[in-house]
Image 1 (cartoon, rainbow, N blue to C red):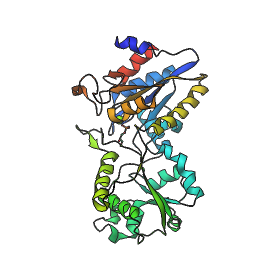
Image 2 (image 1 turned 60 degrees about the vertical axis):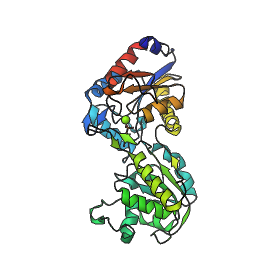
Image 3 (image 1 turned 135 degrees about the horizontal axis):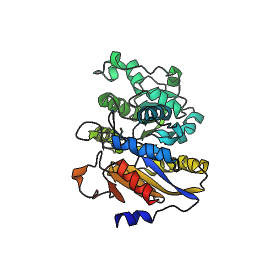
Image 4 (image 1 turned 90 degrees about the vertical axis):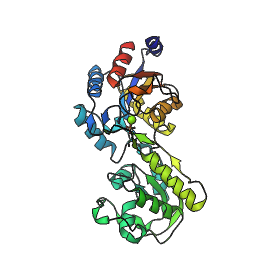
Length: 336
Ligand code: G3P
Ligand code: MG
């Protein structure tokens, strides 16, 4: 019955099936590349029939850097336009900041300056550079140990701040919560010139995610909860924010555009189904479900959801559950 259900999605001649892979908990665990992922990707690449892409709530690097990393891990030619990172859809709002001469304060691990510039933002202020220039604002931080944002252009401080972008996981919750609250409360003693109707963006709502540690780890969603709680305590009001990242539909629409280009370049007219393979029911399964047709949510047991978690997730049930990504791909390809 399980396989018959899949059959109903089999592709018609001019439309194609596409495969979208989550990264953490499906292809890798921390620094460890999962064996089933190597097999699955190799088979799909060899067949050369399907658009293939990667949709992750991870970030902290550019799409080009992630493509290089994936290519090395899997020994396959993976391109930047096959990848949607947590921050990728923010490029759609960068011109509205640039055109109005507004700067953005960016938060996150890796090199937030490079990531924000790569999204098209012109006036970029990394939050740790505010801290470095105003050390008494965060008295417990040792800025000697904080890596420098070497691409950062200081003249951004002359522009009014219009947005705060949490691009990836905060590396210092205390520092970042303090400075974000200062900005949201318009404390004008900070180093930049002015601020103007500041909007706060998060790019990854994951409360938990899976690395090589035996139990899931706190993600950017947990950081947001901590900030929300402190902001509420401080002001008596709920924290206003805008959310990007899976399961938000904006991520899926952005990905569909990339997949459609791949489908056209392979000679298809459109996408018949998009198999979204993930390990986190609250992100990957809910997201693909909410995105609607042609997305099909598929859950594997190699990350947040595990072998001990029963037949399916009770809150966000997937259409299909497989042991790992290789079993998923093999079964789905056979049914096509
Ligand atoms: O920080 C990354 C994590 O929250 C999720 O990554 O690839 O499972 O969407 P991924
Ligand atoms: Mg995952």
